[in-house]
Image 1 (cartoon, rainbow, N blue to C red):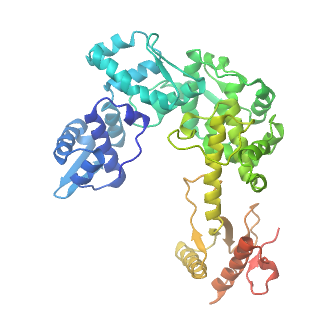
Image 2: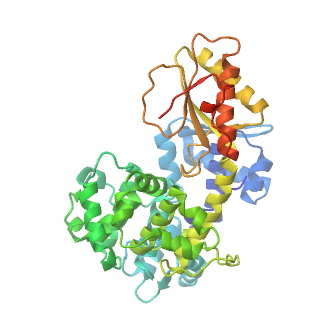
Length: 475
């Protein structure tokens, strides 16, 4: 039941606050839980859990009801905004979070300020620093105790800032709280921008610009960055500090604003990127995957994955959280790449292994999208009958998870009962004829099955099989 600890959870000084936050999160996620289940999730005794819950009741008051029964606890949120505010206040006085906030803000005289606020002595403060060293090391950063600042690659510092301030909603410390009201981000409407992520990364970039942090410029990418900004129409307006961002930093910021899936979607829809960059992603595939290179180069999606990694490597370097786990042995059988850094090479290998494994599984699966007329009950009946028929023939019919990267896709088909379906879609389109007859679903299923088996083993497609009597739209 335990979730992987985040940077914020790993940072907390108070074990009591860590347990209490864990209790709230567990009840948010799983609903009704027993005292034993909460104790197991927190690594504490049931008596400690009872004490923590009683304190939470007093802190949260009427905004939240921690209902207890003979067999467990349940969280009832009365006022969501008030509940979230009190959850952040729960961590507001945590010494470690205060220390990291001062560090990220490059405050002066941090030990003295922290002692004045928390009352902790020098020995406890030094213990704090030792505790947090492992967090810095995960981002390949070190703590300069003379100037009280983080040292390391600029890209890693920015990833640390992003994780500290925005990875968790319970973070009590904020930056540029009124930025959304004064800043204007302009870009082409077609870009796959995540508005929440874009504001978060913009705050990080502006803070580092104020602090004098600069990404290392890769002059090889100068022409690409200029063209990229022109074609995307990306402009930042509203603050004087925005003027200090270089073209390359703006380019990097825009890529980060798209997030992982958005970048891949953008690259797939804009082939001019591959034609413009001063490198060839095929080179990195040949060097990184010498045995599978010829297979992978025919896969347009994975070529774009390689392109995304190469762009990231040249512009921003591979984020530390995406690098190879140093506790695991290096992957054998891969070549040394001149086109990629060591970290990016291992990142591409990890993506490659995941992609090949998932794609092999997905190739045996079928995802059906429906555009049907009629009420929901009739549409549901059609979907269920077609699914049951295909499953009976051994087809694994799946539903695409929205949280999953779209590069890992099952074989997709579209079923419609509309005679003039003219959408520009890549997947095959099948029409269910109306009115529905007793064998309509079976005829439709046979048409889909014939194509599915043909795509799996190279057999003849359904247009050439007389058994497939349902209509398949040709392109």
